[in-house]
Amino acid sequence: MDKMTVQGGHTLGGVVRASGSKNAVLPLIFATLLADGEHVLHNVPDLVDVNHACLLLESLGCTTSLRSGTLRIVVKPLKTCEASYDIVRKMRASILVLGPLLARFREAKVSLPGGCAIGTRPIDLHLEGMKALGAEITVESGYVLGKTLRLQGAKILFESPTVGGTENMMMAASLAEQETLIENAAKEPEILDLANYLNKMGARVEGAGTSIIKIRGVEALKAAEHSVIPDRIEAGTLLLAGAITGGEVTVDKCQPQDLESLNVKLTESGFKISVDKSSMTVHKCKEWRGVDITTSPHPAFPTDLQAQFMALMTQAQGTSVITETVFENRFMHVQELVRLNADITPKTRVAVVRGTCGQLMGAPVMATDLRASASLILAGLVASGETTVNRIYHLDRGYEKMEAKLTALGAKIQRLKT
Ligand code: UD1
Image 1 (spheres, rainbow, N blue to C red):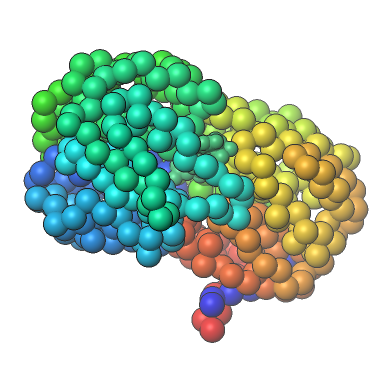
Image 2 (cartoon, helix red, strand yellow):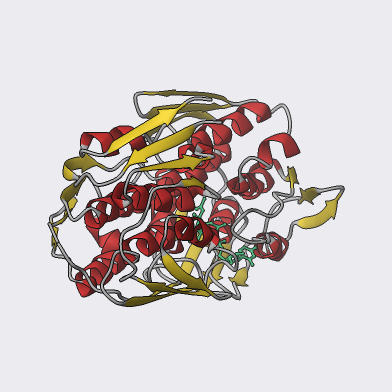
């Protein structure tokens, strides 16, 4: 298993480009199942999760090729409607295959994704949504079995906003008979990107990005071409990397409007942030204050930046209270940050970070999930001596060329193949 070593104490500086969004491209890949033909997606990041999504499509009978950021997917009559345990267990987002399979092929057999390190993450809202559209859903031997004569439009009220659930419903409802209304829908930018792609395919989706989405079902869709939005979480992580070292870093080719909540909190903490049409800069800063954050669905502070922001707060003047409301078990990075000498007290969903503890000290640590691994690398950038982040494969799931990007900004970071 690969590890990464980080030599702390180097101030970052320069310009770095954001990659295409992981969380946007995954639903787009599954949406291609809604129409035969060649789909072309640009600005696709080369990530392990993207590779898994492509393998899933190939196991169903599609062909895929990713070259220089362009992903071509040829969808033709499928050889099976089964998404096997072996593939689904590697990536929870595989559940997004359920809606397209049911809508287009009227049957699906999809392995239950199971729990994951950051919480139990059930899929009950996905299944309730499919049932509301008229699908017959059962769960047998670890698989979700679904069938339908044809999905029927319906009104769906999510009891809490779910990103994946909203995406699954949008894809399914695009080929359903009549109109579907999703209430309390997730409003993340990735939802809007999916709606834009579905509409290019001939779907009629309105209201994406708000809490009410209306989808008028159509008889058939066609393959389309699209450029994936920039990854707001990667962009935010790179800004935080600059911030924690007190350096000046510009993230180019991003969508600053998607990072408003981070901008607000960095500014409140004492950083100066400049925003251009498609770039954001964090300016040099010697001292910053501890500020409180509470994660919540978009446009509030994203849970996917909580761990990285916590690393920044270990270096702040004063105390920061970090409240996680989206996932019930997303503080596993705390124990690892404490190994680096951070002063953090975790409670169930609240962590109190006392930033005046002095310098972090390099140590071997363990990445427990994708964003936790980014948090530990950020902490390693300012810890004295060397920090070794083990189980770095988590990082490869969602960050494209992270060590190359950080190295270009002046970090001393190295991947060790084992
Ligand atoms: C997506 C993102 C993930 C991000 C999360 C929240 C992708 C591929 N992943 O995950 O990076 O951290 O949004 O912004 O886009 N829930 C249920 N029942 C369900 C579905 C969800 O109880 O059927 C709960 C979850 O356990 C969680 C909350 O709802 O507590 C939000 O989850 P959801 O928005 O669905 O996250 P994902 O789509 O899995």
